[in-house]
Image 1 (cartoon, rainbow, N blue to C red):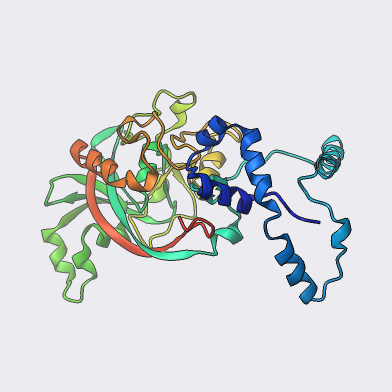
Image 2 (tube, helix red, strand yellow; image 1 turned 135 degrees about the vertical axis):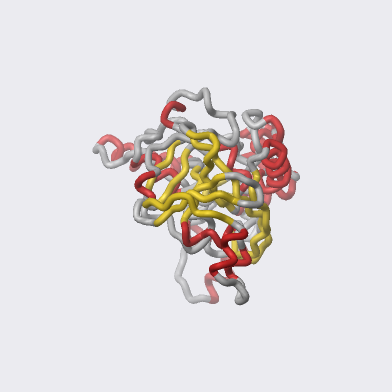
Length: 334
């Protein structure tokens, strides 16, 4: 049989017709789009027959079937119906790798096929505590575009955290003690001596991460503060996935865009399985009207605009660039 469904055919048609958004397919009409896809399905039939024969596979090409045949599709739906009626089918919810060009989730295997070394902006942002706005938590992220969807921060209960005075700005911050070098990179240099710390900061208090759990903070953006269930948002959670090998020891969480973010928020009752999440991004990776300053802009192109907003609002503490390995869609190279 010939497997006629799937992304390869659609991707070829999208390139041929210069289709970049799902709305263009709907405007064209599903029937017309499908007809275009069918028109190229058998384009390489003869080449496949030659190749398969050379490989020594015994296949009856004269009595084949195609997965786009109605009787084949109906048989698949019949089997699925039997499974459904026996209670063997359930609807799951999971954060998956996603191709914004192809407009589809990717398997973990596919997501690992095309890693590239790229430069991405990183930021440290401060989140003032509700019960003491003069004290702020510091969170580091390599994906500034996810910050409009932030609804929680996460710490490790057993890590040691410090409240300290930054002598340059006069601000009081909280972060993991072992990660002070994120804010003061000179601490990682050979010439660094502990006595130099007195010129940079003063530690006011030391405590374990569990002491922060449950505290509320002021969100960096207010796009989702009026959502149903938002009374559970903007609090500090804890989980063992938080480490002190990078960043500040405090992780910003946007559950629509992170597997751990979703798991932790679900476990703490901040969100419910199958419920709506702050997700202001469409199927092509462009911001929706929920975030007006970057409406219609692709998430990766929105970073600099969002960083400028953070700076203007006074919430940006540090900006840098990170050269790291990042997964790309193996089909579209995006």
